[in-house]
Image (cartoon, rainbow, N blue to C red; front, top):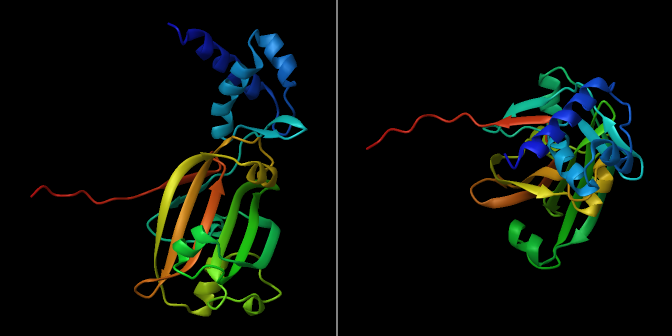
Amino acid sequence: MSNFPFQRLQADLAGLIQRTPGGQRLPSEPELARKLGVSRATLREAMRAFETQGLIRRRQGSGTFVVGQMPVIEAGLEVLESLETMARRMGQEVSVGGLEVEERLADEEISKELGVSLSARLTHVRRVVRENGRPVAHLVDILPADYLGLRELPASFKGSVLDFLVNRGDPLTVSRAAITAVGATAEIARALEIQRGDVLLHFASRLYAGEARVVDYSISHFIPGYFNFYVVRRVGRAR
């Protein structure tokens, strides 16, 4: 029974979101908290569930907007594919914004992930993937510069390192990813136009070429609700 007031608050918010056309802004937090008779902290906690589902988006300094019905990118994780490939297979279009390609030196963390020496030259590729103009994913690829240098990328490069390596004919073998839920940092929140601390899906992946060489360490953040990732597994047999 102690959760009943909070459940009632979520039900009231769900009704408000359903009645509000997609793209329209909800009342401000102070106004909405006052109208619903709760504190702003309680209101934010209740709204996080709707953000996770992708039904609303909070924009720093602008307010909270109803997303409305949105396309979802659905894919199994058994095969590594770029977001562009996933979207194309589903008949959806995505665009890339904020593309940054630069050379940096390896720090201690990245040197361990890639198996390179400290201060080794690295190629950093950063981009934001948009669905219908809305930022839905923030992607960073980090590669040894001797494997992929800045000059090797053509002027037509749009950000998908995986597609570039596949089309180049690289002998890629396997990708290993750690998947967690994290709160958005200030930098990621700005890029995705959400609030700092909002929950995101986080993939930290190593891409291998041949037996043991890591050629790409990628850090990806996805806004839940826009993606449906799943794994198909065979049934194990008891011995």
